[in-house]
Structures are given as structure tokens and as C-alpha cells.
Image (cartoon, rainbow, N blue to C red; front, side):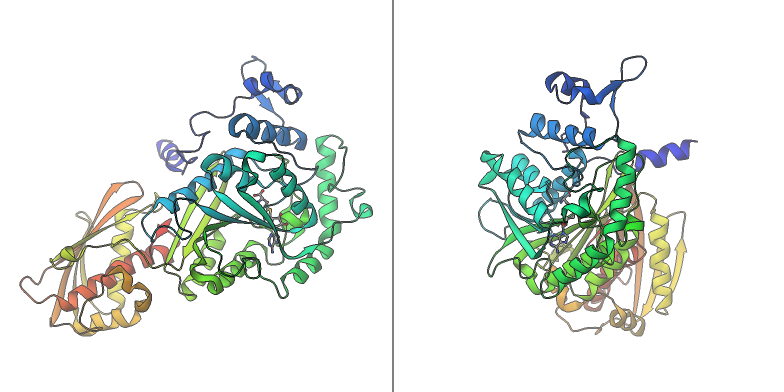
Length: 498
Ligand SMILES: C[S@@+](CC[C@H](N)C(=O)[O-])C[C@H]1O[C@@H](n2cnc3c(N)ncnc32)[C@H](O)[C@@H]1O
């Protein structure tokens, strides 16, 4: 029992700066302030717990409307059936981007001044990210989309908020799709003005998704011939601090399925694309290679953790300088965030004066709670053993002693998965050339200390005291990169510097 509890407590939670982290929406209060919301609120038998029916699209949409109005001063609406965002959940992504922008891991300010400029890929009819980012943090946005209905309603939502409209531009991406015809929508969700009860809605949604799939796929393919997701949409010379994206997660209508516990709407155009989020984000990555430093951070949300690993290796292949990942948790829903950049790291991971000593320490932060010191120790040990070095570990003191010849060091250096050219800006590259160690044998002690769950301190101490350090600089630098690499490759690092 206790272990179960621990695991639950250790799950990532709502972002601490999220308005709703301490104070979840108060349905009772909102019902008293907004008569239009009142009919959707019902109470438990003891009358103490106000609830809404999450399977009723009208209820979830009205909740979003009143939350945006009450807590953010935003006027908002979407037509029936369009994807209805949950405000606390979408706020988490905004705050994660805020964290990325504040972090010193890459240089500050792409666009100049203190003003932050973002790009929301697939802003949807709901235009939620630009509206939240502008109202919460004063950011300006370009929001793109491909469907007429999304473009029309995103514009409407912007115009309904004159205090924010200067900050948000809606832009057509690719070849905007035709609107789905009236016949097509007769039994479906799009443009349906009146709606029966929630069970029928769910049934209809399944039907309408299924009946529209071939068209959607053909349209999507048309959109993507000749025009990228960012390429061709971002104008020449434009600079942004970040892009964000809640992509169509699903590969097929069947996979989209339906969540019987909620009804947040969502048309096939919003939810599905060939290849699903993996293909969509792969295309974003390809576009980012063309646009490189036009954005400080490229980011996307993912619905499936399994896709993270594939996309992180794709990012490595294209030579990004940094990858970060995170988990967004809201209630029972988990989503993942992936961020990358082509800007060289601005922060020194290790200061030069430390590199001159025989000790090197660094923190592995933000790793999954279940990854412990012993996991990292074993990864290090097996890595060095694979290179032919000899290792002696002591798992009670979390130490491994490594003895490696110059040949072993060279083997590790040559097999290192870190691109030297890309990482020179870390200022860790020693003066001497690759692999030229002046030591016959390198004796290194690696110690791993658990700080708090999710943070490990790794220390490498050179045991050949008094020996020239040039080769070991190189070696320890590689060790540093490899350690992070090892954890990331195992899918275990939530955040990492490649
Ligand atoms: C899951 S919805 C996200 C809507 C909104 N951002 C949200 O979080 O609720 C995905 C959106 O991406 C749009 N989309 C699909 N392909 C696109 C492309 N190539 N460029 C821009 N938007 C696209 C869809 O029309 C849809 O509105």
C-alpha cells in the first residue's frame, strides 16, 4: 500500500504557476455568477459537491467559456462539435513554455526587447493558446490553421477581445481545406446548430468521424504537398521566441475512438492526420531544420509517450543542440511536451576553473522519479565495460571505479553519440585534440548521489593525482554527455541536454 501511495504522490502535477493549481474551478461560484452555466451544475446527494456532466459537450464548452471570462477576461465561443479545450490543461503548456523562455540554457531573446512572440501551429477554432498566452503573459502570437472553420472562428475569437486583438494574428497554413459540405454535416457535428443529448452526440461523433475519414486524408495530403507546417507559413526574416502545437494526435478514425468519460468535441480535421502525431511532429522537425534559429524554441505536445523516443532520435539525427521533454498532468489525463532548439547552449555546464580540478560534478535534473542512483551507476558501468574498460562498483556507497587505457578512452570518444561540432559552445572542449591523452591509464571514480526524487548529483573524480589532465578533460566531458545520453536513450530522462 505505501508504495502505491508514493508512486501516486510522485506523479508530476499541475504546473505550480497554473492559476488552478491551488484553487480548482469553483462550479458553485461560477453557477451563481453565470446563469448560463447554472443549468449544467448538479450536486452530490449531500449537496456539497457541485459537478458537471463531462460527457455533455454543451456543459464542457460552457465551463470553458465562463472560466475564460471569469479568470482571464476573455470572451470566447466555438461552434458545436469543434474541439473544446480545458483551460487548466492548456495553461500547463503555456507555463512550461514560460519556463523554457526563462531558462538560461540557451541565449535569451530572439526577437529583441522583453516582448515575447510565439507561433501556435493549428490554433483551431478555439484559438486557446494565443488567447491564454496574450491574456496571462502579454505574449503576441501568430496562430495558423488549415481549415476554413478554424480560421473563421479563431478570427472571431480574436475580434471579440479588442484588448488582445493587437497581439494575435491568424494566418492560413498550407492550402486551406474546403469546409465540409452541409450534406456531410447533416448527421455529424460540424456546423450542427442544435444538439440532442450527450449519448447521441457520442454516437454521432463516431459516425461522422468514420464517414469523413477518406476525404480528410486526401485533403491532408493535398495540404502537405508543397507546403510545410511552418515552412511557407513563417515569412522571410521573421523571428519567434517559440512555436507550440497541439497536433492532430491520431492516425485513424478508429484510433481516435471516443473517450466515454468526456465530450470535448473534436472534428476529424482536428484530431486525425495520416501518420498521427508522429508524422505531424516529424514534419515540424523537418521544417525546423530549414528555419533553424528563426525560433528560439520549437515545441509540441504529444498524446503518446511512446512517440517521444522516436522523435528524440529524429532530433538527434538533425543535429539540434538541445532537447527537453516534460509531462503535463491534469486530473487523469497525461500529455507530454517536447522542445528543441538549434541555438547553442548559453549556459556553461561546468565552469572552466572546475574543469582544471580533478573533480567534475553535475546534476541530472528532472529525471523520472523511479530512476535512482543505482540505475545511473549501472548504466555508467555497462557503458564503460562495453568499451573494454574495467569497472569495480560498490552499490552500497553508489560508487564505481573505472580504469581505462588510452585505447579505451579513444574507443569511447570515437563512439560517442554527441556531435562534437554541435557541442563546442559548452566551452568544455579541451585545447588538445581528440583522444590525445597524456595519461597511460585513466582512473576515474564516479559517485552518484540522490538529492531529491528526480534529481541526481553525479561526480567524477580523477584518481591519477598530479598527472596532466588534458586527456581526462576530454574524457570526462564525454562522460558527462554520455551519462545524459544513456538516460535519455533509455527513455528515462524527462529533461536533458544532448
Ligand atoms: C488538435 S487541434 C488543436 C486545436 C487547438 N490548438 C487546441 O489545442 O485545442 C489540431 C489543429 O491543427 C490544425 N492543423 C492540421 N494540419 C495543420 C497544418 N498543416 N498547419 C496548421 N494547422 C493544422 C487542425 O485544423 C486543428 O485545428
